[in-house]
Image 1 (cartoon, helix red, strand yellow):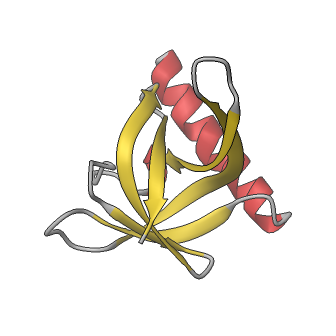
Image 2 (cartoon, one colour):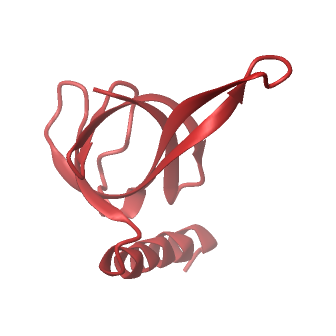
Length: 108
């Protein structure tokens, strides 16, 4: 088994434990003009510093998709996630290690 395959399985197993403890979510992802699929996610609602000197604070929401939970579908720009009563739209992928894909999202 490759490291990538091992980590993908580990991420699915860890998410299942976090989900049962209330520290993760399951949602429904719909690609732009696609078919909805169930998926496992982590939603981070946080703030960020804005401006050259960090003189402003702004809200920011990021979603981490557990790719093994939604295969063969993958997150893409303008894809829509409905999770925990919120509708979130993918804007920009921050990172993707082949197991987890992290996105900046906007409401709606």
